Amino acid sequence: MFKLDHIAVAADTLDEGTAAVEQALGVSLSGGGKHPLMGTHNRLLGLGDVYLEVISINPEAPAPDHPRWFDLDHFNGAPRLTNWIYRSDDLEDAIAASPDGVGVPVALSRGDLRWRMAVPADGGLPFDNAYPALIQWQGALHPVDLLADTGCRLRRLEVAHPQADELQQALGGFADPRVAVVQGDRVAYRAEIETPHGIRILQ
Image (tube, rainbow, N blue to C red; front, side, top):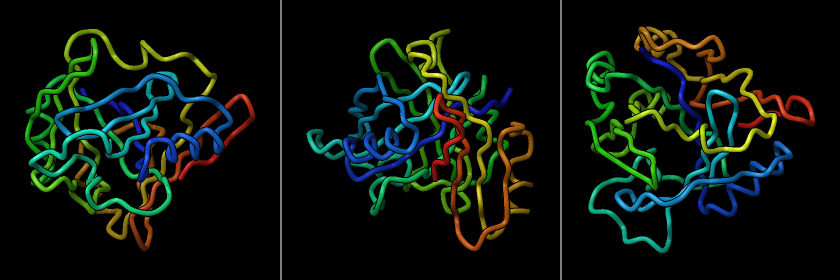
């Protein structure tokens, strides 16, 4: 089973990313923590059955001896949507169904949360980071279970790519009615999120 798990906003600093998302959506982020293996940290926002993650390099953590996930080592500029993440009950099966370079399984944890994630050797995902990262949660606990319901829901996620048809074909069994792969002259993400203040756009 493949299912949309969450979307990620990258930022140069966690405070900058958090402020940008809170201003755009008019709600407060909560939760999150540190990922020692990757030298990153995050803040979260529940979106019903999925969630939003703001992630950045943790300046207080030692730099890992391998590339960070989500290609964060090469990120710069304003906070923005950079990744989408699909979950599977069988990570190896999901990796086998994906293009080369999607990554190898890495076991991770944060607090009571346990998961395995496919992490690319160079930090970057196929299709110029437009292919979804792959995750498998361990046990019944999921981040959405720990997040307050702020009334926000993901209505639509657009993933733009110059080779949209090829990306759509590569996705194969990865499907969610909220996700649309569209033609674009560069990789770009656009999320329509229902909030207590109406529909807000995050990109």
